[in-house]
Image 1: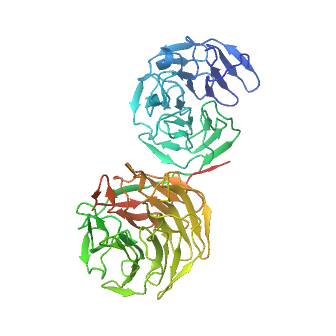
Image 2: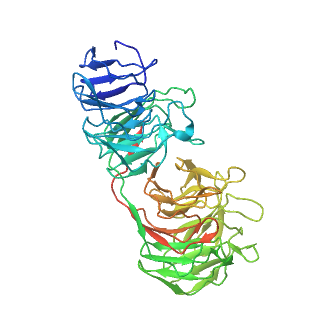
Image 3: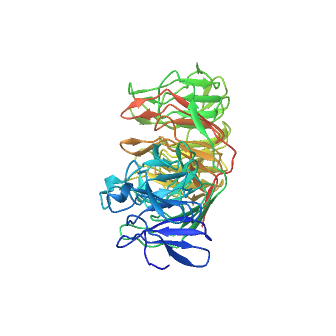
Length: 519
């Protein structure tokens, strides 16, 4: 380029581009690229840096925001020859990202205000440009500046990376804009700020950036975003007759069995079994031993429950099997425990995993053969209240509670019938998670992210990595779950400070291929 600088805005393509502004000190310089050389053309009206541009060619573009104040709200329009000041942003800011749209249709999101301001001034704001005016639309889910952006116009965009309000810091988060709302999707492999973006919302590149702050360690990583967006949504399911959390769910979205649990509203153990037909919950025969913090697996007509606690806080190792009508006691677990989780296709096979015994959180795994429990290989990371999915020969363990501080993990392990192996972690660290699905297609639903933050997060495991999908309508921990990643159910649980829930939500997913980020 004719003038060395950084932090300017850009527009166009690799054969017809425009670069403008930048610093430091702040510049008005504008240069155009013809595929071979840079040529200086007419300057901006106001010097600015840390600014953002949008435009499909080097003959029609806009530059918006940046520093210093008061130009942080200013917009200028390029007609191929001159820059003209047009209508300002609603909120002036800098270090924003854009959809890399056109001079008549663009999206601006994130950033911070004022220049040099506190981290509390990091924004979720999104504004849409129609060629004349900026209009504020729905915000990002997570406030960030220094993001990468891509897209074609103000109806479809991708925002990734950046720096989020502490303690989050440098971010790997990706969000997709559909013209109305932002949805969290699969994260970058490498978290970074001031990352470059190119392409569309369905086929994009994340280029370079800084992997630490302040100051930053520069990265040469390039990641590609490709594929089709996962589609899915939660809707209201039938209300259970008895509110509870820490209960056992088994079955499918339209044929679920829920039993036992703890009602924190009354501080009592719930010995109530209910059956769901996709519309209504009906009380059926109770289990033989009342207990909470119990888990199980199976179907609506062939289920198994095991372990838990019963008044006055005594650990249990009892196992009961359900035949569609009644509960029957069978052989006990080897290790009495609570806050564990379980997986299995029906009452004849299964795994009981993790949890806590009388003295500590454990990594113990026991296998059920229809008659007896047998101890098998332990988890690599001891934990309780993880989300589990799969069968006794192929299972996944997601997140959970670990000893000590912070007491939560995003660690994920896969079971092959013999051993547990660590695989890629969840995006959001949580405990008290509900899990459903298989070892290669599972959901990790709800939980808590801190002592005061119950979670509505929903992440899908595709056998390789986790992708963030649409959140629950209501945040909840200690929920129960059943079904698959295309037709699931999450219900009951607890919301702060102690209230137990009777509501349920139905998940209707998609078989559409999930986007993948690759180096």
